[in-house]
Image 1 (cartoon, rainbow, N blue to C red):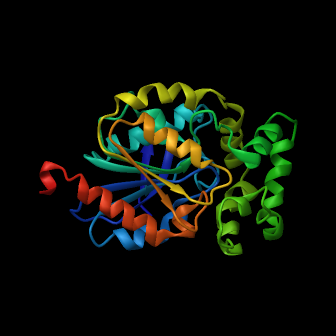
Image 2: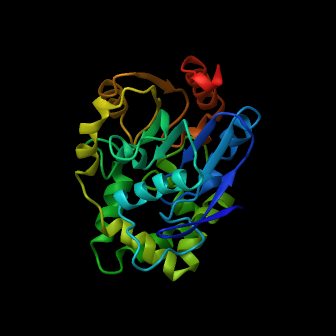
Length: 282
C-alpha cells in the first residue's frame, strides 16, 4: 500500500488512482481499509477512491508517542491527509466513528459532498452497549487489555454486545483476525488505541452538531435500517440539521452497511454524486 508521513506518524492508505471524482472512505474504531473492500471494488471504475488507515486500533504503524489521538486529533489527521495529497472536491464518506463531523466548520474546505453512514453523533456517544463497555474498560486499570483479548476468539467477537451487534451478516473470522491483529500483537498500537479511548470527550459530537446547520453543501445520511447501535432517530436528526441533506435507510443493514448491503450503499452514493454534480464534472 502507499504510505504518507503526517504530523502524528506514517499511515498507509489505499488509492485506486484515476481521474474520476474523488471519494474518501473513512473507517471506524478497530477497523482498517478492508472494511470498505466491496464498496471500493464497485466504485473504482468511475471514481478515484481513497481509504486512509487511521490510527484508531487496526493501523499497522505506531504513531509518535506525543501524537494527539483524541477524536479531534484523528479528525485533524484526516484533514491533513487530504491536504498532503491535495485532494479537491472530495466526497467524504464516514462510517462508525464520527470523525467527519468534527471537520465541519473547522477544516471542511476540501469537502464538496458529505455522506454519513451509521456513526457516532449527537448524544449517542459512546454508542450502544459496545461503546459503553469500551468506556468502562478504559477507566479500569488493565481493562482495555482484557477487552482486547476477547477478539482472539471469533465466537466472543461475534456476540451481540461486540462486533456481532454491528453487522447483520456473520463476520468472517479472517476479517476479525485481520482487524484486531495489530492490537493483539503490538504494544505500541495498544498505546495508540488507549490514547484515543482515554481521551474521550462525551460531548464532542453534541458540540460539533452546532456547526452542521452551516454546512450548505450536499449531504447524504444513509443509515442502516436495522441498526441497533446507531439509532435511526440519530440519523434522522443529523439529516434535519444539515440544510441540504437527504435521508435514506439501507435495507438489511446495521452499522456496517458497507458489509451488510454494499450494493445498496454504493447505489445511493452513485445517485447522490450524480444528483449533485460539480462544475468540473459536467
